Length: 515
Image (cartoon, helix red, strand yellow):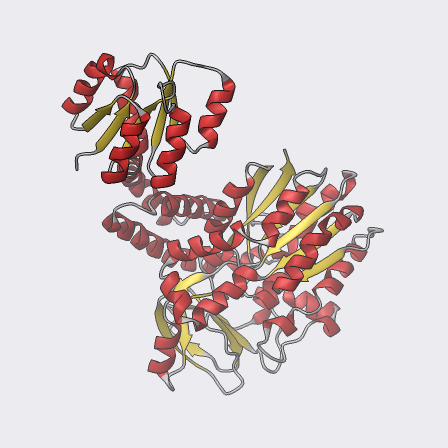
């Protein structure tokens, strides 16, 4: 491909050596001496880049730039000037230039500018591909080395970051990465199967932070700092989605991101109740039986006592603080909380649950339109980015960035793209979840699932309906033999949670301090 470059400068004859240099490098350069000719050519031709002199007689560079943007708003323009006055630079930048150079310019400087603007994606993709292939063996060795929980966090971070880096790269290379993620989740499932129950033993110290630890570890120590603490839980947020949100917040906050592991099942009734209670599900059921129920699969009803559980955790800590709690489910809730967010600065601690990402996950399962808009992980990530960039939550973050406060952001569980089905057998009272089930006499393929024969080993309640649990690993989802094909087709390629995968279990918890 030969790039077409337009160069407008009233001293263009003096730049002839530069033009010859670029043409020898394979670029097609069209020279003009004034803004009027530049506008005419741009209107009738397809250029890839414009070099524009700021100080031309007649129509100057700033005026010409404005007209160029009226005709072709996305055409990259590089402003070149003799002046170093700040207001000229600000005028040019405000008119959306792609770069700004001060005369005299040399040929290599021009060439590097072209490559940075026109070849950036290609060069970055090539460099990323080379670097990923260099790291491939190291990541594979980590996956297969019976890693510790700390090493699994590193592996997941690497794979997630490569997923973002290679997002627009070669499809074949992305398939290599996808296969490596599949292999990682296969080994991660084996790791959780053997290690998870040991983490829950009383007195065990060689374990990661788990859901019941989050308030204790991240909130309580900061309540003594004499400034309000905000705890924001974004339901069903994966680490890759947090990286997108973090990038948008980095202009406003200094951000430190750590990781913790969700308890199993990685489903809202278990993981989120555990966060707010500071207890495991079996402990909640034992100590607060009126605040725990397994009467149905409606996640909203199963989490209706989060505020009470949070208050009880503060009470057990003997803190003379009544925590403020808000669950933000609908657009009206978003607007109300956003408009009143400064009022919460009068509270020492406020907790918020934002349900949009989880709602989007469930909506995508039921909507062909959303599946078409977000056919894969990358597109679904872009969809959540589009929501966040126009959300009341982002406005809340922007407002709080101007205040003296601390914000802790986390999630209760992630989600995994469920692509493979596996058969499960249970009685009529078995729960309906696709990545986890509880009931009696459950049967499934042992290679695709984790069986919990004794719920006490996983600190899970054991009731008449929940004698056993089964948790899907990797990217499997459970389907009953009856109506198998119908449910297989309905739920294949949906985002689900409840099982044991890196995406569901390894979760970010970030501390934000306004800049």
